[in-house]
Image (cartoon, rainbow, N blue to C red; front, side, top):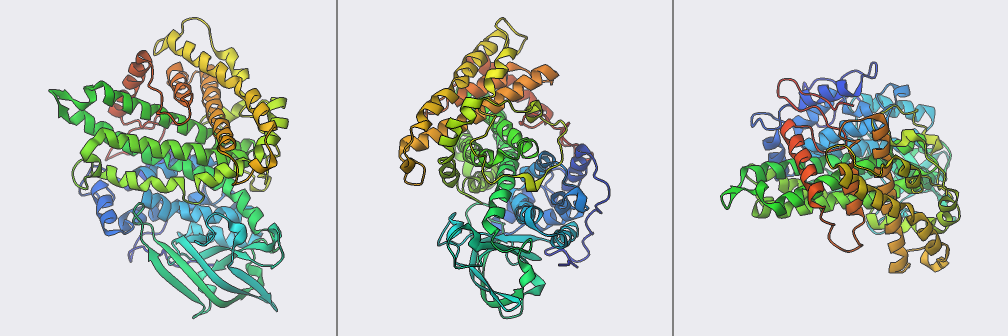
Length: 607
């Protein structure tokens, strides 16, 4: 599989940056931001105006793709051992958030789509397949993945697309649909049924260089037009008796397709949702600009108590989402035997938080949220572009269903054994061991340590008054909620141990589904408590202050089905001041502030 061109690049576009040594994350972010330029400059071909123009046309932003190609974005997806820059998934997430903040279509269409495909190759491919894919990506090529068929949705076990062995050839027949970059890909990763026998060993993944497909055997289906992510090129493929080498099977051994997908999903579901935090980061910034400029009743909209309350609540929820997604991303390196659970929980919880946050911001903007012109015009695009985070790649409901059969196992093991996770799990930005794709387990087998970690962190909570910025009241609220969540594993164990087997499938009752919601909320709360506790011991500015963690647990304790809990006024005031300061300095709204963007000298996240 070779690449001699950059699909979609204008003639004469520069070649991507050579792989070379893996530079530090701030250095890479600095280089990327310089290439993307000032988003507010109307003359910038990758600025907000250009992003909106491309969205109106339903096209990928060509100048944005050229900039990312020059940066060598696809090299970020290649493990360092294969000549790329991928050493840590949290660093990859930070790079991709910079792209998603600028234009989610570039994030998915130019970037993440190839990453989704590539993870399968790093997980199961043989040395030759991995080397070929790495070379292609380093040169700027695209790899597309075809998992789904519209008739079966997320039920990949019912795949009808076939690859039958005839002599020394595989013959492909059938359709794959809703594939990003189906027409533009240099290679395809396809899930196919390779046996008529029942069971999970009847499916394989194939790595198919587009140039190797014989003429007349592949038909490109019409493009799927979408409401959000308008520029992303979604297509479909129909293969008709298409012969390919038997060596096209990923890894060389048939029957491992579903197993490979389940392992790969642990990486992609976790990291793609975390990348989408960048969308909400920009949405919150856009809303803050609007309310600070808009005058109502003789004052700015930002002076209205309700507006402040909504914006502060979104800020807290964004910190909460970032915290759980970051902990789960670090777990892929540190606890690969448990991430089969974390990935489902992140998709269910964090995707829901992100979508809800942008919807609530739209209420603050009022009639301005759907205007396609003017200072806030980008918001309507972000509101549309965030929606696929809830169903793209896998639906939130499907992830919730996958958690159901885990509950009795957790009741018998994790919630009784109380295993302590490594402190490094919560050490945001700190070093990580190398990622081992082969260590990702198909099932956690009831072993999971994050949900029972809160009890150990209670010792870090002082009883008396604390420092400024929330001080004693914040500590008191944090302790009260942490103690309640620390008791939740025992309550869940009692309820889940009694579940009838009929409650562990899609036919489960609302009560059983509610248990998965309680469990994933517990995981989120544990991530926040553990991160705050580590930051307090490490003396990390802002992150060690109790207000954000107390506010996060306060909102997570909202009764299910109710509107998010309003924060106590002193806590809300303290967090509003922090939010305004982040807005003033351009530091963003995630756990660790990033260096502000300057047109002449763009900076990177201080991490």
